[in-house]
Image (tube, rainbow, N blue to C red; front, side, top):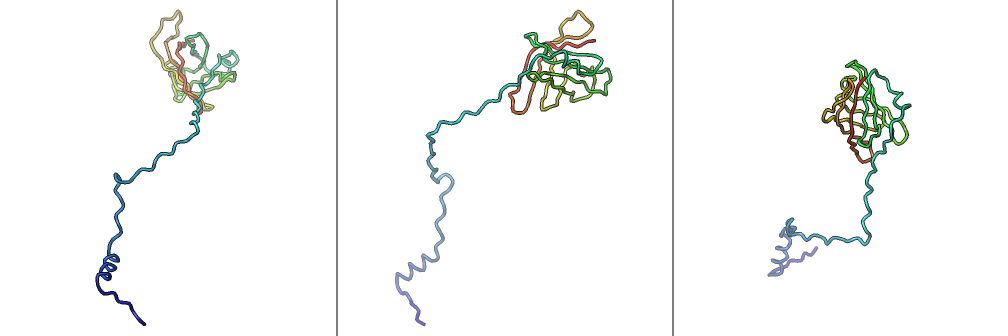
Length: 172
């Protein structure tokens, strides 16, 4: 068997090349960023969710509620948007009804407290709908009930949240 032996400067270069480490990659700041590719197509608009359409609560829908005492939310435009009912029993949960388009939707208070909790404003949910009443300033009434400025907030999956200003009235 014959072996090839290199002598001289050529052997030194070959030996040196075999022992040299690979060149180090450039640092983060040194790497060239690829040029962005610009699309010729216009960006598609992101559809914005539509608000929840609430109708006026009908007498038939309000009659479905169980409870000794009632509250009602009237929008600033004078529409009856929500009717609630509760018992004087603090362990019970009040119920409310709203009209989603023309369909009555019954919702239950998230917390117990009966009629007292209902008068203070509460949060209600059911059928993939969340409604909250936030009471504002007290208003004078000509009856033994209570009246406050209020905001009704409503949310549902796939719909834009909505807030409606109005009046929250409760009483026998």
